[in-house]
Length: 420
Image (cartoon, rainbow, N blue to C red; front, side, top):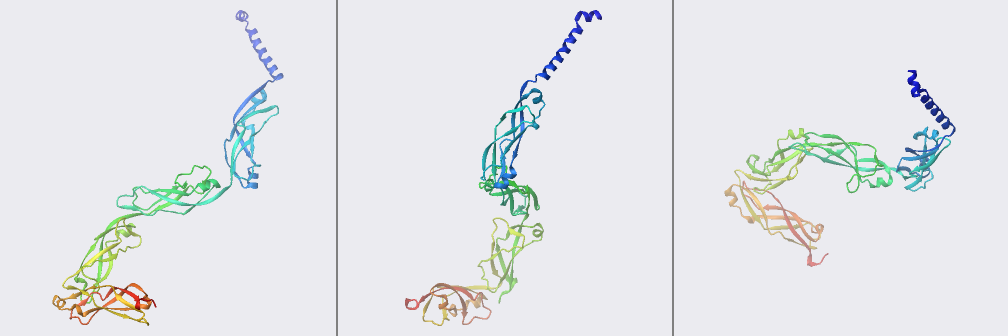
């Protein structure tokens, strides 16, 4: 073993290695060479924000880059002992003018240790945007997507609030036209309530791109009523006339049914829609009567449905006769009856009589006249539609006049063609 170690100079080699290490340490401790070193992603601190806000009302809205690269030069031992978080880089905004805008500001860097110098900062400037941060109120628009289940329809959607407060730079706030929330009712059979995300949109309906405008709330509760559709028949009631009882009336309604939609509980209890009561003493047989379709609260007509229905009536066991009346009697109640001349422009008025066939055939049309009571001074010059009253000198027993009141057109002109 001794011969082996002597033969290969093991001790000599070990001694040489130890002496080399010791010599390197001595050199490094006596002669510490200069060494460059770079640190990336060094955080840039923005100084003077409070002073800027206090003096000008402006806030820092955007910074182009929040980190920089810093190149250091110094003793090797000093540089290698540093870390990026001990290097200070700052940008001061306190001296900016009181005008919203964008500025390129120099980055100031400070060495954390004596003997270490900052040789370069990249980039050397930071692009800063400042503006006034304000609030604004924008309308909320609700959009409904999807289709409810068959036999149902969506009613008018409503948000819990009509306005939304947003915050941001004044220039960016001006870009916002409204806040949009979207509710989905696909397959719904009952009222839908959803918390819908808020999207801020511009005039063209496009989402705004600014990341600096914030909403006071991220979601808004939207309620969409879901109504059930149902086809319901129309009906009508009658009031007895002078010679006609309700059980004698026969009628047709056009349309016979209408489609409505509304609250499920209300719709379920509806078996018919009554158009109202018709007085058989004044209605003309065979002439359609238009009646509005009235619905209970919470129920409305489906799209495309008529708002009125026509009722046509015939009377069992009663004959009718239509007579043309051409005789008009004018009674002017004004104080100065000579100031105006009245001319009846209606040539004839049809009236309807009811009774037995024999009695109706014996009636002479000449017994009828239409009386017009008017005040020419109040009506004044011109053409007017006035009420006339049908009168007869005598009517056979059992014969009745369906309607005594008629409409007549008269023309009032100054006497002698000269206005008074």
